[in-house]
Length: 146
Image 1: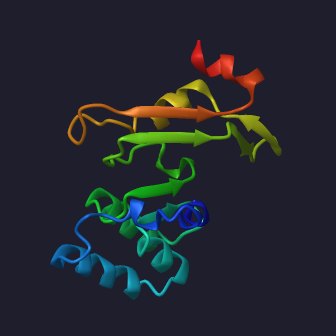
Image 2: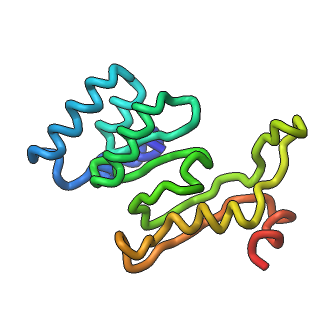
Image 3: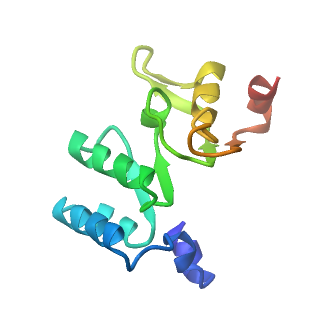
């Protein structure tokens, strides 16, 4: 995403509008204190990541900074599908297969999981509307739109 934005001269598109004021500068310091180069580079471009392989401290810091608007685009796994209340306007599901550890195979995510993930978009206390986009194989699309 960053590479494409850079190629199109649009790197600043993801940056929050408040990058010179105190709350943002405090958030930047918190990211630098995590000593995680990937999180630092993403943050400096208005982006963040969230996945189960991160430490709990890193995940909670990213969640908080996203909720505060310092991170404008958050790329994440299904770790945020259940129970985390964050102010997302749009949610994009890219791919509908996940690894089922019990069966040892890749399987389609359930319709309820898709609804939960899309339910992150447009939360009433944060937004007046929300958008959900699903990117999957044409043969699987009918499962999610009926």
